[in-house]
Length: 471
Image (cartoon, rainbow, N blue to C red; front, side):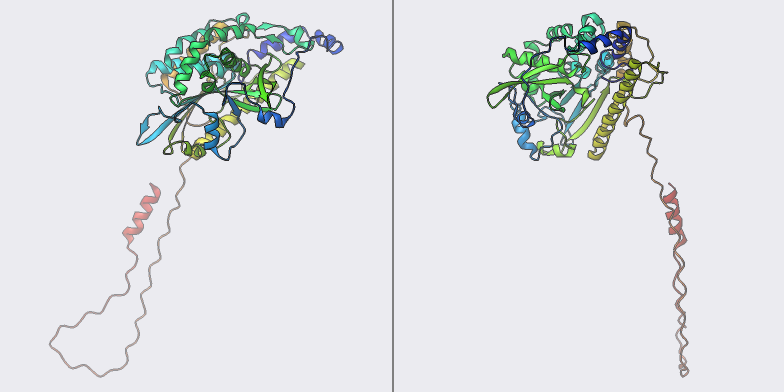
């Protein structure tokens, strides 16, 4: 949902709106003319807490909750999983948990698809224990979860479909009170082409190995982020409603509010059926690495030993602001303001994950579209642009150009060690005057030499300290 091109070509839609700005006046007069969609929404926030997807236990959970008993929460949500991370490799006796997070970005999702394809060609792409997706990332995530053999499908999805094969503008209907400015019926058809019963069987098989595939949406009624456990849904592959729910979650995660229609999902509360309105997951989070709002160390109780973690964040957009003079018009000002809002939300999410990784000793890696990638585009889904971006992703994936920290976090300088001061020399003890005594009797023994005064601190030790401090 973020980048130089917000969502599925927000800039293009805004330009189209400019061309028909006069319709806004009509819309203000006859604003209720378009038929409203009938709903049976969940009535209260308390009811929303109890809502479940019928016949699919553990299908989703609130992403902003912080369970007090994580083991209990996971036992409820991760039904059918023998042990979390059961298939993870062992490194020095500890599980190595690799997490792949795919952000929003609209048609810039071609970049993420290219990165994964290039990484596969390099030959060291790991099997991820947890794959997360938001918005455009939700379309990539299921294929990334199933591994490199699905790279051809990613290439096809992101480089072969033009705008009119994915969305149909319905700007007038949207302005006159409809749900959105575009219809996503073609996108739904495309998702159904690739996501079928056999696809869910493959996802369920991996889920039973302890691997997680999750997708983020926003419950617009509750104004809260939701994480969908796609493996739990896939377990019910023989249920046509489960197959449809799997598809609906992906479409909902990419449903930019106002531009694309929301997805209403049926839920049950106290035996009654209601619906929840879900929109783009990027409304609440552009990217995420944990299904609930807890630090990494809190998840250690789910493993035999605290695991080693490697995080890979793929940002389907540029993570640096792009300068461009804004025309003084309503739609240009609104569009560029949304661009800036989404950019800094994305940067904030990225930095939060970086701090989580640093606090837990996890290996942080991120990649984004290079600031100097400037291929021109002429429509929402410009195939020439997307193919060039896909190839750029392949190049970066092959080169494994991962950043170890966010782009605007300065490199840490080594701590300056203070030079120790030399210890002062100990003064020689005063020699007390001997009392008068009778002269000693002469003796044939050798005279005994007097003891020397206290020795000063060895100069070579001071020199050693100075040397170590300057190294």
